[in-house]
Image (cartoon, rainbow, N blue to C red; front, side, top):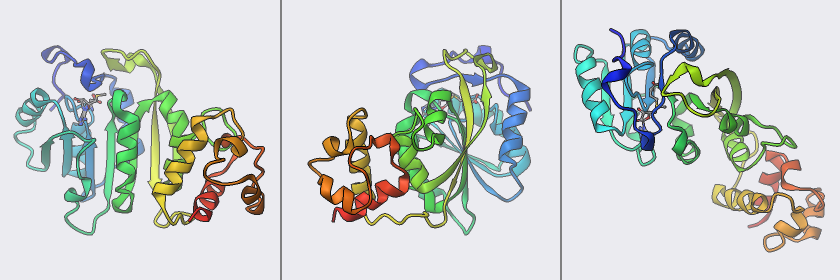
Length: 264
Ligand code: SAM
């Protein structure tokens, strides 16, 4: 069974609908995911089923979460003969992914994500990392660059630090706009996120880490001495062996965790 022809559904901008058309890219993505029988795969935003079909062929069971009611109806018809597919109509930003975990199998999340909500969606998904084996997402290249950026690189920021606290991140490959219909105005990329069973640096309060990272990057060009002055003194930073003259992009995830743990 093939995905529906692109002409039957008018792509909705508000749902970030850019449907994958290029079979070679689809094959490359599925190969990177490497789905196996009896694994618990979950696809966010199945759309017209471009990835759904090959994922279901390989894994035999697949849960999908789709917000667009019309596409849900299309998927129900398209996959009527496939009892292994469970379709959940809803907003992935509000979806409680823990409700999908029914047995000991960890969750494998995949999706060509709607670019307009990808950052809040990634933050939402980080709440479920203890249940997740891995995540493979198509994202706007710029967001993928931020996810995988290392300390002192230009794209390193809040998203890099909060994601890399929970997950090992890997840039897989880039995808050009011509692989989609309609074509997005930006380049895309596939990233792999693998949650740590135990984060390498334990943070006592994630809310505090988030607050400190947010505060530091709200004034990216300023030194920590200035941007964090209401949270931690320069003397205290020196005591933690962190130079208060540094900018936030110069700090590692570990150093942000050390600051957060010292602010009890
Ligand atoms: N997977 C399909 C493909 O690769 O061709 C579609 C990808 S398209 C970029 C994003 C999909 O996510 C669309 O089907 C869209 O309707 C769906 N979507 C958008 N916002 C969503 C949300 N908040 N929750 C769940 N699905 C959403």
